[in-house]
Amino acid sequence: MTGLTGLLLAGCGQPAGIDGALFDDWEPLGEPTVWVPPIGACHGTDLGKAVPLDQFEAVDCAAPHRAETVHVGTLAGAVAQRPAPPATDAPEIRAAFGECDGKAREYVGDEWRGGRLRLGVALPSPVAWTGGARWYRCDMAEVTNVEFNGDVVNRTASVRGVLKSATPLRLTCYSIERSGNRQLTAMPAVDCAKPHNGEFVGVWNAPEIAYPTKDVDWIRFYDECWKLVSAYVGAPDDVNLRYRSGILVLPATQPEWQAGNRGARCYLRLSGEKTVTRSVKGLGLAGLPLPR
Image 1 (cartoon, rainbow, N blue to C red):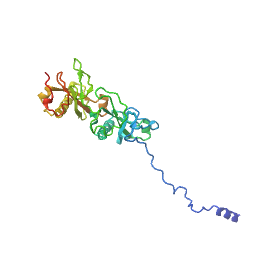
Image 2: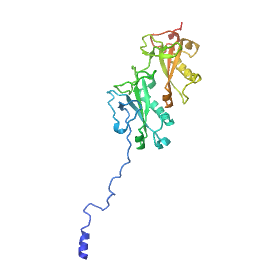
Image 3: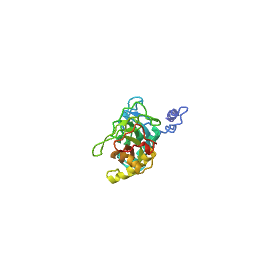
Image 4: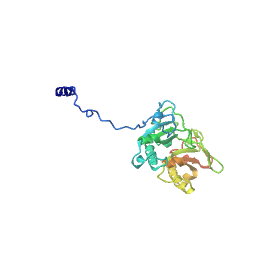
């Protein structure tokens, strides 16, 4: 039996090139990766709406689309440890909107609020969050107007660099209409070469202050917009300027404000029933007609 046992054992030797260690030559498994949406992708979904990965489908920006991703950031710190995505008015989302704001300006080539554009923040779905997704997506859309909560436009071109030069997207001149109690009723955009009584002058980016709800809250908004009117016209901010013109201040909506949008658009409005047929930019006080 000893000879048989020795023969059987001899038959159990390793073939050439095998060292007997089953796992030590395997490449280690890489860290699992989490999908992150691409910058520059256009979407058929509405602004700020993130869909699950299995439903995500970027479209060609030359095809009709409703939003475009201008930046993708990452939520970190304590918020990243939460079991679910933060609420849209959470401090972390306001901070994310601040980053989106700056990146959007770079993407379109100028202050995006100076155009018929809207910016929103999209978060991963709860399922994607559970799977480790901590990105936030900065999406931009074209709208029919920015003064009366206009509808989203189905664009057929990218917004990248769209405000670097003259474009129909830019806010310019308006025919401002008010009711008997001086409430704004309409302000359709018009060609500056046609009679108009209003003109967009710029944006005041407010600090972390409360949304204006009382008369006293609006004082600072008016003061800051008067500064922009003064610089735009090229005339001192004094009684003469305020006699010849008024202002219209349109901040973001309250939900947008709570989500981090601190921009207030400022418009010059001519006094009385006066109109002009050219832009008043840089014309000085003489470019503003007397109200009577």
